[in-house]
Amino acid sequence: MRRLVIIGLLCSVAAFGAGDRVWSVGVIGGVPFNDVGTAQINVTGSFVSFTAPSDSPRYTVGPALRINLPARFRLEADALYRPYSWFEFVGFNSSVANVHSVVYSVANVNISAQWRFPVVLQYRLPSRHRFTPFVGAGPSFQHLSGSSTGGTLEHLNSTGVVAGGGADLKIPHLRLSAELRYTHVAAGNSGELLVGVHF
Image (cartoon, rainbow, N blue to C red; front, side, top):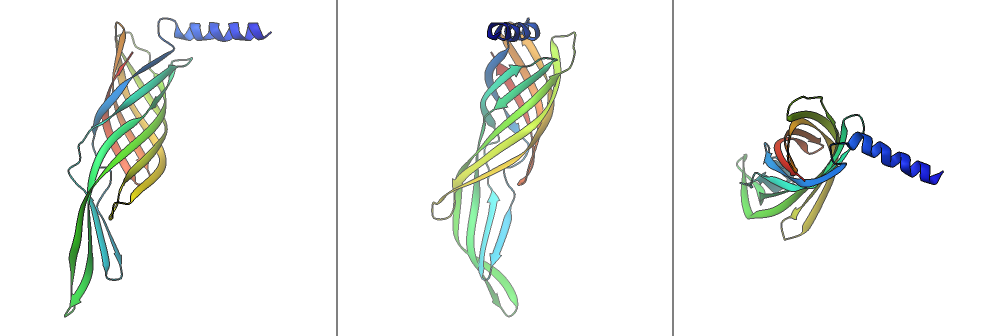
């Protein structure tokens, strides 16, 4: 009985994977449309802190794994890395003759990293051409790490959803892809253009 189950699984894999590999690995990278964060002002009594994104490199890159499923479905899992930096100003709020002003005493430029782990269930639309369009959606897990004032390492984790669509181009021994993705997390929304190479 056990042998029959194993043979059945192998046959089903061969059936939907005929002419296409069951799994593939590759590299995916692209250009984000948004900054990692937005400017924020926090006031606690006379203490004022102001943070804002600086001129961060606008790229994201990482490995990708694809697993082909029955009925033209496919599962893709990525690990996307993006560096970013932000300014942090710390000062004191003072008032003289009812005129409020902020005197900033500390200014730092912090280098941080964003890691995103989207798991996307994709559906490949029927096509008679070399281009195969697809759409997909799924959860996305985000991890931010960086140093605050004083060099303290801070971590922030969040969960959201990702949706997008694109197209594959199949050539011998390779599959190229281009995709537009939209990601929503509690910290804000973001979009990006991604290009991948899968083996």
